[in-house]
Length: 451
Ligand code: NDP
Image (cartoon, rainbow, N blue to C red; front, side, top):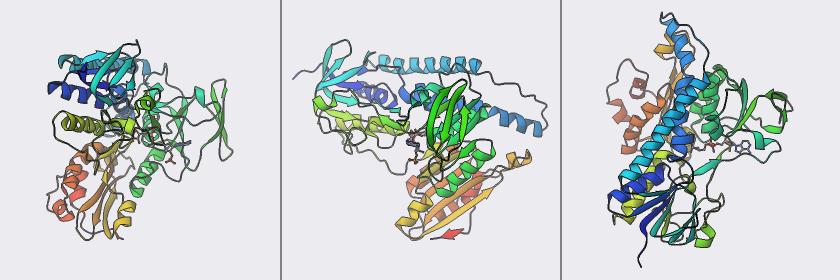
């Protein structure tokens, strides 16, 4: 049977664009449909604008440190309108780069929504139908709010990049990556931030000691972090929202941000009609090769709700192309993925937390927490953490956890060693780079705990 395309990709985010590009470079006839902006969550409303906001928010601290280092600098106000205009110009540029990548590689693009009609056919919003030997769904996810009266007016992370003006105060609900990152960003930009987290400590699932230090530093830098607290009721009032929390306290916040998780974009995609199985959270169920229950349909990235990170979606896209167009079945390796949370200070982590490692067998824990030279000189009390979790039997480093300025950069490199299966002795025989914070990762001699 002759198809219009070898591959039809639905979704122009990081994963979809990479798969389309690589397949087209290999000679496949490829089309891609995107209903919104090219670049997807990462480029348009996630990682990239978030990181630029992280940079913007770090200047007040840098300026106060500069004064301690002898510079005469005065701190003026932050002009959100100026920053926002530059931010959006940059996002427009990046979107152009993504479009360019597709165009330059001969991928046909359709700027509209697409849905499946059957295992080999896609229907576009304009009613046209296109057949394809393979269909790749890479539609990502979206933020979700709890079902609470009044929540419909509140913000989600997508809205933060589009705000007309910076609020004076904000309540952030949630304790995951997005809640903690934006609590730090907005706090740095001068917004009065209150954060509610329903559990005992933010960043559930990460190493206890590491997340404890992040929470401590967040609170010390001015984030009003309230643990074991959730929204009980909210109503729109003049000047913001009156919020009652689960402990009975009431306060008015100009804005409320729900950072309470994300859900896969699988609604109205024609999955049921085509016979593509979805899981309990609406995620597309795939095997190790990203193949769905329909052999001609594959899915990658957040829509599959495996590990929801841009570089993982990109790898899944590459592995899909290698499997389907390269004739080389390639499973995606989801083990030992390094990741960073861009709080202030950042957390960089790879491998098992101390708590998870303990469940698996005997371990040794090497950890040190100290005031780094740069901040200490400036009179700041901020602390950092370097931590290794080591298997007592094999000596392999099972987990590396860093809380420090620049931890995201550090963990990328430590991640190579951990992925290679480095032992504690491999770390030990590496000479320290002095004077740095990260040298501590190779100079810890005695375990602080065994378990
Ligand atoms: P997460 O799933 O990480 O966190 C959701 C948070 O909201 C949790 O603290 C959860 O609490 C809480 N929550 C969920 N439902 C409710 C509710 N009904 N009421 C109150 N609190 C609630 O989601 P995020 O939105 O922060 O991030 C989504 C994903 O995006 C991340 O997991 C990550 O994969 C990715 N991401 C990665 C980034 C990076 O690499 N730096 C940055 C941003 C996002 P509980 O812990 O109790 O379940």
